[in-house]
Amino acid sequence: MKTFFRSIIKWIFIIIIPLVVLTTCINYFYTFGWNGWSMTLIWSAVVTATLINALFYLSNMTKTKLLPFKIKFEFIPMVGFLVGIPPKRPWEILIVVPFCTIEVSKRN
Image (tube, rainbow, N blue to C red; front, side):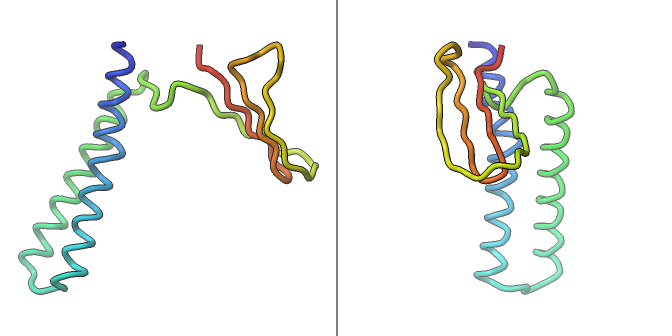
């Protein structure tokens, strides 16, 4: 449960907050335009501080994983579509798309 809460905190501080700030900044400039240097400077400082905060959390939470599963990509010279579950490994899904296999498995 402790790792679950850590991964939620990492999602919030690394992905959600920067996306919300960037979306709000873009929406502000789209709605009101570039109406002065002061607001441009304030929004630039807020976006920069948010991205620095995200980099700080990313560097300090290196052992916390964002996803509870591993994703492995491989290139293969094959064309086809497939979604399969191996019978001996029930916590694994294999997805085959043209020239690529994607293997999703449970993290140990």
